[in-house]
Each structure stands twice: as C-alpha cells, then as structure tokens.
Length: 316
Image (cartoon, rainbow, N blue to C red; front, side, top):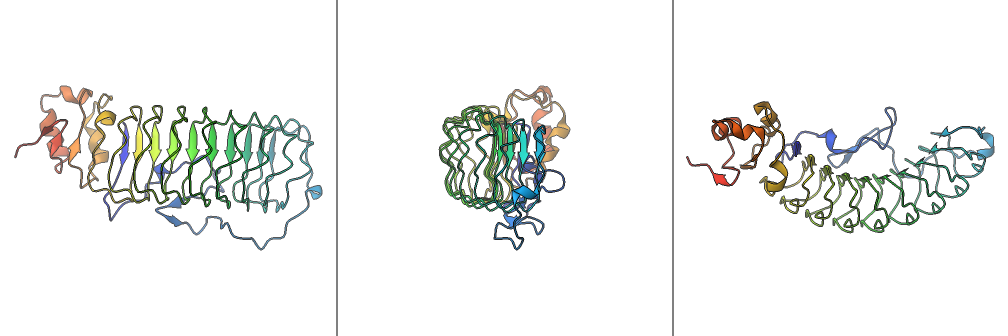
C-alpha cells in the first residue's frame, strides 16, 4: 500500500486526495470536504430559475459529444435526433425526471450532475453506457441500473441514499462514488470483483466491514465517517491508497497484509507517516528497506511513536 491517510482524531488536515475527482470538470467540480458543503457547491433545493423548452435549443444530429450544461432545461425531450451521440452532459439544469433517452443507444457517458432528480429510471436501453454521473441530486435509492451491465464508473455523490443496494449485476464496475450520502453500513459489494476505487466519504458509517471480496481494490476512501477501529482490510491485498481521516481512529492496525511486500526502498517514503502522531505499529516486511542493517533503528528514529515494527515489539 503506497498511501495511508488517517490523521489524528481531533485536529486533521483536509485531505482532498480522498475524494473522487472525475465527477465534474475544472470549472464546475465541487466537493464535500470534512463533512461540510463548500459555499460554492450546488444546493439540491428547488432553484429559482425558470426552465426553458427544449425546442428553443438547437441540436446537431452529427454531434458525438453533446454539451447542454446550465441551459435551464426542465424536461428531457427532443433528443432522439442525437443518434450518433456518445457523451451527453445535462449537468446544472432543472431536470426532475430521467426520461426520453431510449433512442440514444450509442451513448457511452451520461452526465446529470446537479439537477433535481429523485429516481434512477428509464435507462434500460442505454446498454452501451460505461459512465453515469447523477451526483448532487435528490436520490434516495440506488435502483434502475439492472440493464447497465457494461457500466464502469458510477457517481452518486451528494444525494440522500441510505443503503448500498441493487449493484450485484454491475460486475464490470471499476469506480463507485457514494460520498456525502446517508449510508450507515458497508454492504452488498460482494459481486463487484472488478472494483478498483471506492469512495464512501462523508456518510454515517461506523464499521469497516464486508470488503473482503474486493480483491482488486486499489483506492479506498472512507473519510469523515464514524469509524473508531481499523479492521476488515485483510483481504484488500492490492490496496495502494487508503483515506480514513476525520474519523475516531486512534490506533493504526490491521494492515499486516497491505504494508508488506511492496517496493519501498527510500527512507524518505516514510515521511508521509510522520504526521500520524498516534502511529504505534508498522509492517514493512519484504520491502527493499528491510535489507538495511539499521532497518529497525531507522524506523524508530523516523517514527518515534512506533512501539511495534513488523511482528516484534520495541524494547526500551
């Protein structure tokens, strides 16, 4: 594992790396950091703007990348002419219902970020879709995705979702973003064996559990939750980045299978752990660093709070 971000239980730095960065572009991407919504983020309440009719918008039937950002669209309609469209961005509009997309069978990416959508529905004909973004809406359930078996990236950031469910059929899913929702339990992820990135920051999760089947996971972010103990990570043998800051964790543990057998060869690689004032145990076995004759002494100097190196306690 290359990156571990835990921080102290009370005073912690904002760690933006733990948020997925693909839901949004350079101008409109906004994130929820440390459980607080930034002032520049969209509000999922009813907007004061008045919607426009789709027949006032000119569409090019030959266009493959269709950008209808912030057009005050109130209803999805009249898009059947876009028979060649591969990407469709409808972000920052006034859309309440996903509808009238059945003709867009060539669509690869659908972006509905920052609207007023309450339900995932009417997506069954979009079988070529590999990326779906419905972040910053009013969703309460994960549903209606059964036919999107080719989906690789799913962004549902900042909704009102309380349960992880109805994802079993998305066996090719590689990235799942469920940050800033109302989730209390990590569950129903067993079938997502292709998942490499999982973002669950800013929820109400109290325990790290039900992750053992995610053998291909390389990035796990569960920042700003209610976790007090590091556990259930043993099966994540390919994990490279772990973000756990802004929880109630006091002891770094349970990483025996994650910190061993890597390619740490420079002592400067330990610098990222120096900010973890409560760090008491490190496992660095079978890294190039272990060949250094002063291996244990250098770890003690670099990380003075450590009381156990690999399987052996330090004698004072």
